[in-house]
Image 1: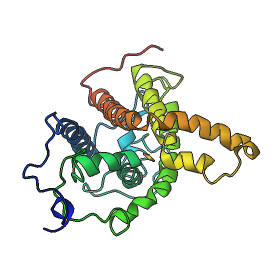
Image 2 (image 1 turned 180 degrees about the vertical axis):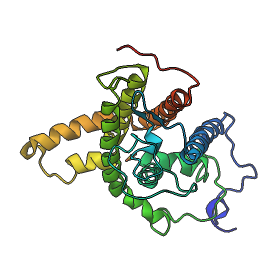
Image 3 (image 1 turned 60 degrees about the vertical axis):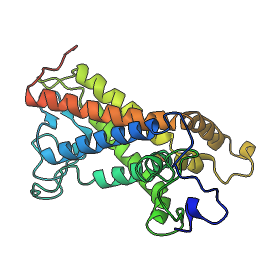
Image 4 (image 1 turned 45 degrees about the vertical axis):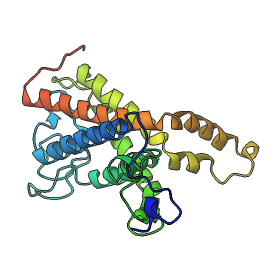
Length: 265
Ligand code: FES
């Protein structure tokens, strides 16, 4: 190889890095965290059961919106647009590809999986295994530029999740009800909004390409608010992976009868 660390003029060092600290630990933890979510979300998305609690109207975000005749009665908040689905198509098929696209093209997740999965590079002063680097200027990585469009759809899905959380204030006798499941669903939705609004594309849409903030006070306020969230984008990216899994797990446990929902009203 004559490129990368083997390019002419580069120092000849036989080991991958001269670093003596545990530089491999952050990428390892990142890989474990991402793998946990991917495996959990895949298994649950294809499971096809325990996603709806009819007594309390809890719907897991992994199956929302549920728009086919395969959905159990009550779980289709926006109607059944299509017939029965074969088992190999997840019932949340409408939103899942866009949410996957949104996270895959997210600026933070890009950093995380470029370093940890693709090892390009794994860490500062650690040689990467790839000979060439073409950045995001060629196929397929040029598709990362679709992020802002995924952001628009993710905003719509967050609205749908918000609606799901509101209609879940339901009691078995048909009136208002409130239980631990509502707390779980609402916390998840608040975190999803925080993650979605802290998006770099969202910040640019709010305040980008302006010459004078003083001439656009509303956009400036929005940009200021989003900028404060934006510095927490990495944390929110991880927190939302956790809240999504916990919300789904809670709905699954209640729906399957493994636990009872703790009711306050
Ligand atoms: Fe992460 Fe947009 S940059 S969601």
